[in-house]
Image (cartoon, rainbow, N blue to C red):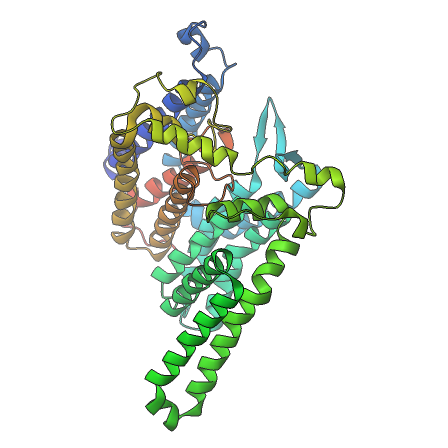
Length: 446
């Protein structure tokens, strides 16, 4: 009894409460999408035939899983961190052999009973543990390039496998670990380079090539003029500026067009172009369009989902249409509304005010996780906490931006809200391992 009371005192109940509240909101959102007035909703909730009833079952399974994690020993997560990472990688390789194609992505393993496991999603947990284990090594010097490259390899190897599975969305998620590495000492200039590259890619998509090349040349000339005195003392600065200029022009002239026309499939290029208000010509794409019938698949505007999503959210106005009164939601106009576009049901039913309050719940959860991270005595626990915060933050940002047309449609679920057992189990494990580690925060874990 004394140990149980000690365990209860160590648990961060605020995180548990926010997690449970988000789970409840998620089931409510799925219910709003699927509600049928001709069916007794109470019976439907326990039938196991509707998606909201299945989500309720998933939530029950996750509750048992959470209790199991809270009763486990924190040392297990450090002891088996590397082994679990290896297991996750093996599972991802297994999808190439026994995987199931869903929406063009061979990233699912059928488990029976209608449940499909997505190893790329589950491997996020194992990668968090492995990265935490590596960065908490006692003799690690993270200022060395070798140490940084090993950490990057741990984070991005599963991302590479996700790309090979044609699961671009999950591959993007693994880049959230760079936030953790910056917290642990990765140089900030790398973040600046990454952001600048992103700006250059967007500029390449929306501007005429010659105009952008002229702008880049003017910027280089201005930099040379400002640094002219330093250039007189050291010609290396001039060479460095010219190399950056040549690299940027090369990226916008050759690299970006090559990637969009040869590496990306047509629907992927179309989604990115739609995000910046442009129309992509699929006749230029040599990776997807092999036959005439392939071209017909892309005649329908690829931004249909996003347009319907924005209509649904916009129709909610300031205060929303009200619970179960959304015309877009009830009319099934938004595809994938239980999963990728579940945010639209909140926007339409509860409007801007409801959406803002909902996002504040997420913000409160993230702030709480960061607070938990900073109070850890163990580097392992701190790094893991930042991994959890980064994963959740990236999922929220991409999913919401996707719903309002600020990011391409890449199939990223909204944490604890989107329908799906695999996603719900993943976030449950992530969060409750954190709660378990925090309960033992006075212990030094390595």
